[in-house]
Image 1 (spheres, helix red, strand yellow):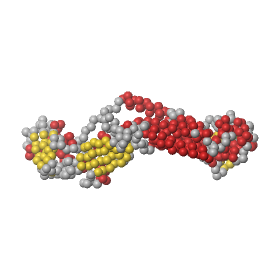
Image 2: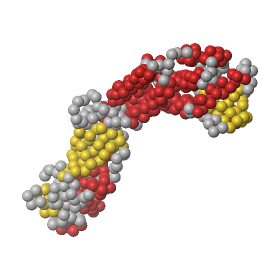
Image 3: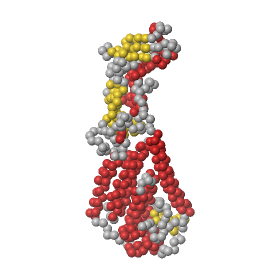
Image 4: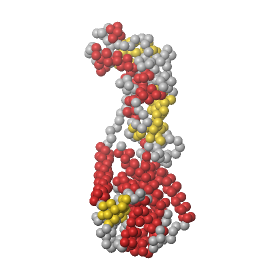
Length: 477
């Protein structure tokens, strides 16, 4: 889980950084403000979502390598106890756990701090809304009067500061028109998205640049619309200078006097970009390719196609993509999936998955076959890594049903063989049944005369006759 989180943050950080570079050096100089706005918003959204998409493998050529492991390959020398797959696990180092926990705590504290600031700003805005007096209500916006903050807009509300006596009536009209444009184009939603970006990637120095850039683009766009509506550019520039000292401390609102004023005046007087310069935005395509390629390097080695960890074990907790069965004729795929008890989307761990295929509880796939006589049943599992998911291909080798031949008891001196055979649910001529075999072992352990820890059952298969002899080896107390 920690690995997945840190990889997500690394991929998002890479995406933000790569997306910021073409904007800084190419797009920010253009006067296509709406295009720039959508580029910045798209960059923010993709940075949040791109880690969830499939990533190409650029570190190993060729097709994805499949890890294969098999279960229940019955040999003549195998005992019943050996039919159960056992696997040892290597404990995770405490130092790695401690480091991950420390980083997670630090990240969580940063998120909590940024979230607290976000809700504090929201609370301040709603306090202003509650104490403001509604002056006018329209289809696009509502106008309120207040004296706590400089004139600003938030969602569909415009909050005029009537205590600012430095503005003439004409200035107030221009300020109101300016804020109405912010409201009409829903600029507050952009700011909310950037705030969410700042919470998730609070540690990334590129996020403040995105925040400043989206605010500037909003102002550039509105300023240009004000100038195109017939406002005198010089007069409008003087108004910007007049309000330079007024700045709202709240990051969620649009204030007319948003700094830096110099850049706004410079862009206001800049010659509009030529139509051919729109071709500059074609850079977005190679930027997307580069971002995806770089993000692919921040996958765990085990989740890249063709790359398995040194132990051959998959990453704990990797989501399962698809589960495909092959070779099954005795049972339909639906019944096998039901018995397996694992579905796409579940977290994959090899040991846990093996337990669903083969365990002593009788709830496994192996028991489904072996309780019907399919002693020679086995299954191969192929792991195919695709992006951050693993597809599983299960190939079933059913073989043929086996019947029980001879049942031999060894090591019994105090208890007669006939008494033992009468007590166990296994008789010559029966179909091989794994559950009955385990049950007979339990019965012998509960009889008393025999050491329960040293009851051995050796199946001796005969492929030619399609039978299996059972040899019970007992040690008396």
